[in-house]
Length: 173
Length: 177
Image (tube, rainbow over all chains, first blue to last red; front, side):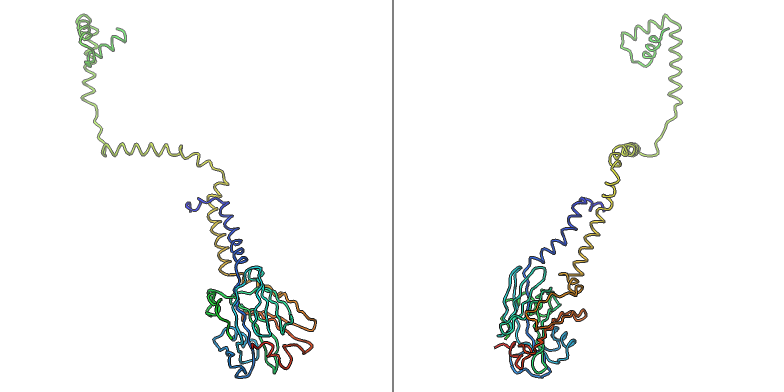
């Protein structure tokens, strides 16, 4: 115990006070890496577009949606990874008629502005955290549904698509 | 006979006088019976002491005996050298004893919070408020957070039933080209 007393109380207190502040500052000032994913929900076994990728049981987001909604099949229409510096806004064209404006407000908080057919639908401000998707959704024709999921890219993510090295990956078509 | 004369006689008996003074004492002894009597007394006393003095034998070696004395002297001197340290104030004592513990405990709490809630996960789970602004009054929305599924969903409704989300071709609105 004597060995530890070489640091004066003021140093210990400074460390205790500054450690959370340092971590917070680091999170506040870091770039935000997110993945935007457009999903079509249906009970149809196949998508009219063969390029759409059926999300299987292994897909965590699809599993969460299956547990929450009545639809049985979830097709990935598009997926884009973006890196957004603090204070910056990135425009993500997730489909020809659906666009997102994602602003990094710092401390993992984002402002997501949704555009449908060129018109602004609304703006959502919330935190986007690893393993906790932020989803915008609505009804589609023929009792189908659409989902736009914003997920934080995390180095520890089990899904390789949600790791930072996937930032420069070509968006899925 | 005065005291100096007695001491001189004793010095003569012990062989400590130079030859000239020793010769003077011899001539003095030849003349003075009292001096001879004192010298005889001194001789007797010296013989008695040398013949009957008890010899003290140490139970340990000489080096060990002196090393014990040295250690004892050091032990007795030590409190005197440590006294200034003992005179520290009670605040200094508290700081010395509890500062490391307090520092460790604080660090443990901070690390625990960081590990338990990386990235402030609890702030999303705990705050039920979602900041949502819709562009049109014809649009409605309801939101929910599923703590078990760990998902936040904002469901958008078009009350006019006329939006790109509910028209007969809604899927085309989000379908890529």
